[in-house]
Image 1 (cartoon, helix red, strand yellow):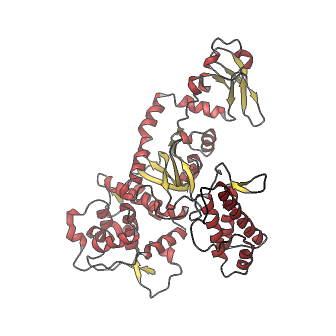
Image 2 (cartoon, rainbow, N blue to C red; image 1 turned 60 degrees about the vertical axis):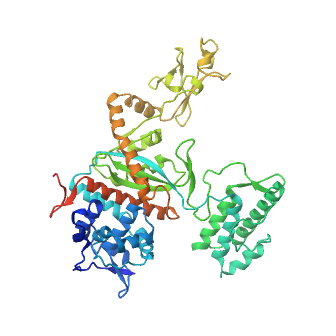
Length: 520
């Protein structure tokens, strides 16, 4: 497919005219200003090697379908069907009522081109350009949070992953001189052609252990053949995957047999079909598999400023710098606001060093089972001492990295209420963070009523935006594709669609010379 141009004239069956005032919302915005938003050269950089004379689809039509597809949570086939049959879609895309749709795979190719371009987030970025020109998006505050994106594959057990990884390597080696050598090294009675688990008496523990050991043996034998070889492309990726799978869930016993380890690897691959998906959790009891979508929201306009997709096991704070990267060079940087996941001492310090003011609620250091917590002790960093609730004061013993510890053991024996402080026979101690001063400043600041009012009135807006982001109309939290970058393309397009809908609510339109609000 090559890049096309929008037709200059239209047939008399103009969907915009047929619908009249019944055309509302984002459909009307795109119908009236789609040419300005998605001009003929909108995707020109994605078609640098395009050949002339092939069937074409105008950029406006492609962009409109991609945005509305994300808005309504449709498959590629459903999106093309809507373009052919829904007058609102036809009006938004600027085509006539008799428009014949393109093949659904055109959308797949366009997403691939968009992802490989120099501006893969253009849909989202351009909604912000419109919002700033209209004066509805400000850079005063950015509120951060994340939400799960459930993967599009099934989580695999260890046996399935081992066999699948060997199969993937053999398919990648097909036709290579190394293929015969690898197959000759395999000792299991298995051609590794068909999918699924191998035959086994799963109720027999010894049989299961023999199977796991044999699979690991084949995996290690295959990797031994490839050791020292220059592996590139799919072969290198398959070999790397096999090495990771063979080492993450098994351990060798004293008898030399490999068995499934009674632990979960920290960065465990959960499926060979999507090796980038991971186990994740939003709370102690809420776990999920797949990815995280991290959002930065402008609370003034309730527009999404940026989105970042990470594997599910990445901590929220680790995505902060990517979320606010667009403001790194701003002369006046926005205040960053988030929940307690962003309130670590390192995050507070890093953002302060970068010139950002972070408002995040440092969780209280409460004690277990009703005992005194760290916050019940008086920490005096100027005197480098800690006072306990009973009035005893001890000095902090520092380690080379700046961390410290205050031990009250000598005072615990004569304490009138030791049962309220600790159950340890060695007495109570308080640990001091290397960046304790930063934590103490943050806790003192959040005790201010003005801080609390700003936090409670502003931060919930990101929760509402996430609710818009994951509602069923946009496909919920279920990923449609596999792989982090593919998921990210969908998430970025979804964020742009939500922003366009929000711009309509804010009354943004083009007044002939610039983007503005109807009230301006």
